[in-house]
Image 1 (cartoon, rainbow over the protein chains, first blue to last red):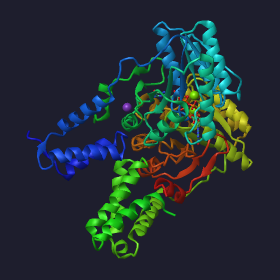
Image 2: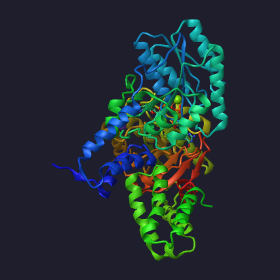
Image 3: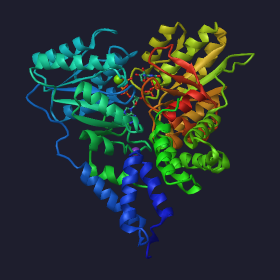
Image 4: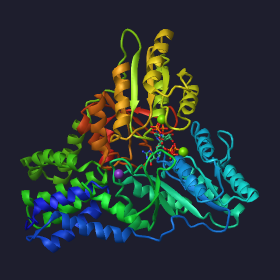
Length: 276
Length: 296
Ligand SMILES: Nc1nc2c(ncn2[C@@H]2O[C@H](COP(=O)(O)OP(=O)(O)OP(=O)(O)O)[C@@H](O)[C@H]2O)c(=O)[nH]1
Ligand SMILES: Nc1nc2c(ncn2[C@@H]2O[C@H](COP(=O)(O)OP(=O)(O)OP(=O)(O)O)[C@@H](O)[C@H]2O)c(=O)[nH]1
Ligand SMILES: [K+]
Ligand SMILES: [Mg+2]
Ligand SMILES: [Mg+2]
């Protein structure tokens, strides 16, 4: 098999494969044009081209081993993101992950807005068997965050994970609320939160770029949890996000169960990105 | 009126004009800009390709090349083509004359189903109809409590069976209860599920078969990307959808996935969700959506 001629049809097929990942038109055009420059008019195997793009992607996404940078206990993890992206569920899974590795975790139910958000996180805390700090429906989320850090300090917890209500990055008053939550945590803790995790939905398209920008500006994100990667969506938008905001992916969500989480692995992610 | 797309087109056509007359050959640059804009709006690529085929045909007709301002003509063609695909408009909820009308909401996890149950209830209440909500999500932690709170906020009854693990039975019993109470509308809040999850898609089909909803609406997140074609197609094949509701359009998502969903399902788009509050539901307007997708 001597391969296929790299012509418009070949490049079109490649482009379709790239676009399908949600990496966006710009990055897909760049990669396609690079292949055109190198190989147009020659014969290649499409698989070889994909393998080389996969390798580039791997290299770009590879990162330090540790998924979480946790300082002196108590470490504080703040979790933010748009509505329904998977924040509360991801908190449950990360808390379980930390608990099984011997850490004492306390959860903070900082979503005091959404119907039954507190009950949802409470059920997770019961599944995990960890402490939870809750406020009343409609309470000031910053005060719940404050009490959570306080509880972690008092009870000698290793990690506090604080949930926040979903919000769109265009809602400036709600983004300011995040800034306030962050400030309050900093004040009580005496340092910045150890991690501010942005939970992105893997089915999201190009709007995830705007999310990364908006939430980073308001809350100073340190990493991403890519939830719902167990579906047929590929989550390729993290490529331009990584490039523009240098935000690493820390975990991927792979289901609704307590164990359905994995440390981000650049190799398998890149491979799945361009798989058929 | 046509801001960003037409700006791009204007500069493209300006540089083309400098080189002399517009031709079919250099018209392509304008079409490329349109294609790119649609991809950036998250319209799925196969849908973009087919759409561009139509636009191409119309644009290559004499009209654009002979017009004084070809960029304006091209934008007009793209916009009207989008409007005609996104339509026709039907933002009503069809109610049966006799017996309760059963509406089932389905979709991926976190798309906005439960909230939209509340929004539809609010809408119906404004028409003096008090629907019964059925809590058929037995999966997500505190999903039943969430629907109860939503029901309370709107002031409509919520049927729950906290100990039943079978959503098909809960839906059947909920409908029977609503019938006995003389409710004119029943809304089933189903659990979120992935379109590739055969087991859960099968469960949804069993609800569909056993309860026979009159209206099945797919609730789609406005921020969805390329995968929209696949998931919408799977839900439509499993359930024969009657309508689509796109949520979270109060932000800056361009919502191009709606074009993908419309393309594969062909069913009318009913409403759009524009906020978390239960009054944030608007009838769908193709013109506005076309403008939004094109960022005009
Ligand atoms: N398949 C799958 N579903 C997930 C995953 N993570 C979360 N979900 C589901 O997605 C839905 C939304 O998850 P939540 O954790 O409530 O999302 P959230 O961001 O806290 O939502 P809000 O608080 O309303 O903004 C739920 O039905 C979860 O079970 C995942 O990795 N895979
Ligand atoms: N900004 C905005 N948020 C919305 C809209 N519709 C729903 N939401 C929010 O999106 C999140 C998820 O909504 P739900 O109604 O719980 O979604 P769901 O589809 O029932 O989720 P699952 O049952 O877990 O699959 C919540 O935070 C809602 O408040 C909308 O139109 N705009
Ligand atoms: K996937
Ligand atoms: Mg939540
Ligand atoms: Mg729900």
